[in-house]
Length: 458
Image (cartoon, rainbow, N blue to C red; front, side, top):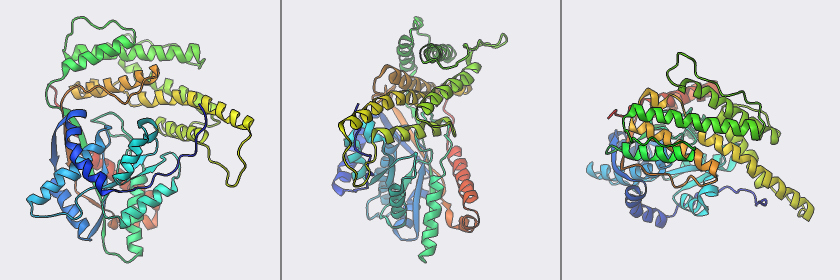
């Protein structure tokens, strides 16, 4: 693998023709590719009023949405392009321009999904951001669009998907910071618009029972881990849960053996369950956390870094350090590297790509929990966990995880909370910026948590 040119900032290039084509294609794509056959919206009146206020020049609008799935951008597009426009017409409102939103997207998406995806996102109004560094062009663009853009701005404050419909990842402070920057910019310019932060929840559920598809995926994963699938095809959730625990244990055992015996990490022997424990699941979480910590330490050591922050934070820092090696910045006015220097840089790129493989495996496995299904054995929670394990097996086997199995027709439930008026917190922000950002982030996290509805137990 050779080094490549530096990763450039991808600015928004909102194109009305691309947007119009997207509006035509979206319903078919949602139904046939994503298998989202129904959209349920709660709190639409709030969104209609927020958009009316924005277009009337009474407020600026920052939409903060949950991010449990890679389908979320399409669900948000459906909300703004279709559901909001229709709700406005029912109330006699004609939004001009037609509702849409501008947004930030991870700069890594065009690397794994292809350059075409980056082109589509930018021409739909998106701007790229490198999440693990101070990406000044992205932050300046977001700040300018929030202050002056013709459309609301949308962010996922979790920063990335976690694969869990019913668990919220810790929120990053950037959403609150952008909201405060915009409120301060409005006040400094003597403008009287409100700065509204609108929480929106996204949650997916199956329209029909999909236990058969869940069991079929479980069989595929068992075979991938070298386990003999249960020939009884018993769809009882408690029995499936036992197989899920067995699968997780098997995958963890193989990964522990790989890192202990082949990579030579100082891993202890696998922990046996306590004698009074009915199943080994309680030991799964600590064992998995220990394994992922040691795997990341190995990559951090090779990059000359120390561990800092959560596992997710460490993955992002490693990703950025890897990008800095794979896409090195060229010194201004410098001479081209000699053939020997270039060969050494290419060798470093090869080793970096190999090291990042360990980080990607951790990244796939980091959201897997030993308690998520046990707490509530619904088909949605089974599907969430099995798909995360599917991602992990794909990473380990060197396959792409882009074509995830679709287990059945789904509905998306979109819940719109009342907006948080940021202006009323501006005095606190001026007094103590860090504390104000933390308080707003905590309020947003609480609002998004409340929008999660427990799945049904069929």
